[in-house]
Amino acid sequence: MSLETLSTISPTTNSAVITRQALPPQEIERLPAIGQEAFASYRKSHPTLGSRQEVVAKALDLLSRRKDVLAKELTEQMGRPIAYTGIEIDTTVKRGQYLNRIAGEVLSEDVPGDPEKGFRRFIRREPVGVVLIIFAWNYPYLILINSLLPALLAGNTVILKPSPQTPTIVEHMSEIFTEAGLPKNVLQYFHCGSPSHVELIVRSPQINHICFTGSVAGGLAVQKAAADRIVNVGLELGGKDPAYVRPDVEPHWAASEIIDGAIFNSGQSCCAIERVYVHNDIYEPFINACKATLSKYKVGDPMDKSTQIGPVISTRAKETIRSQIDEALKAGAKDETPPNSSFENLPQQGNFIKPTLLTHVNHSMSIMQDETFGPVIPIMSVPSDTAAVKYMNDSQFGLTASIWTKDVGVGEELAGKVEAGTVFVNRSDFPSPDLAWTGWKDSGKGVTLSRFGFEQFVKLKSFHLKDYPGR
Image (cartoon, rainbow, N blue to C red; front, side, top):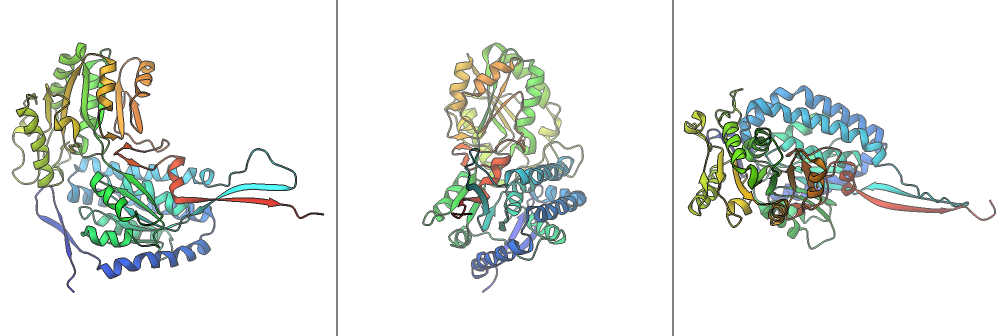
């Protein structure tokens, strides 16, 4: 049987930059059993959390040392400008160090606060077994570290399935952790392009937990494949994250922050700002400030250190974004993108699209309802705080949301009414490692980051010990 060849297509040139051989189905089916064998040996070779923390610390140090090489690969494979890809590696290391640091407290035994003479009761956290992590291309190191480190620190073994768009991430991480002292087969990976082949491993009874980061459709497919057995599935899915600008803010400050939150990484973030509601009283000044901000951005070759916005990931993504924009314009929206030479002279090759400022949108438009995953800023005028919150909640998604105001107390009050897993006041697009990262509605289920991000990788075991009579 010939092996399937997976090609990574550069979003900058639309030509293949790397190829990998997909693992045959029969080999994919063997991975969980290998993982179970490694799980038994891992518990013996690294029985203490301290020994596992030592491996993680060494791995993070090695990851940091390879930043320049890894950053260049990210730019080549997914198109984010080289000025920013190294920051992902730095942030990954810092996030990993935080998770490693809190593991001792988080994974320790819980002892009830009402001891009784002659009895000892406590709750121990045990590893679940073999963890399957399927993760996306847009922030691959950050997404991966959220699940990989808690899983390993808790004592589990892990199987990784990367996006074909960024296939080398798993190869680097495997090499790094091996060099750091992780035993053989504790961390495995496979390349695969066929959903039916991924389904084989999802259905395996030797997989004890599944983490998926990607589209809603992909998450539903994984959940469906796992539905005929008892296994936990954590889903980090899409977003249509709203921002509300109150009339008390300084327009240029709010515009610069919101534009950055909307179009950084070409808008390809699950927590990017994808719809903006602006109070009537500040609407025109805010639009003018957005124009002034956008006019200074540079779209271009992502290998150029002065480039701020690179291509979107694929021709299909480019067409989807353009379709949403065209639909909105036909329905009455206005394209108020300012003059900008880099927007008007996009590279001829690749999937480049100009950051687009849309005004006069309404809430029935696809651009305000469906995930865009591109550099588009649709702005809608609203008459009040109450109306803004109503529109913010009128969505199938609930990942993050932001309120922009001088009055932080009012901002907090409004944020409390918004249906989202993370709410910001005067900030956006920032998964803080000490806060729970979780989606509401169709944005997912389960938690990563913070102390709560470890819970999916352990099962609780209660001990109730009574002294022997007569002792």
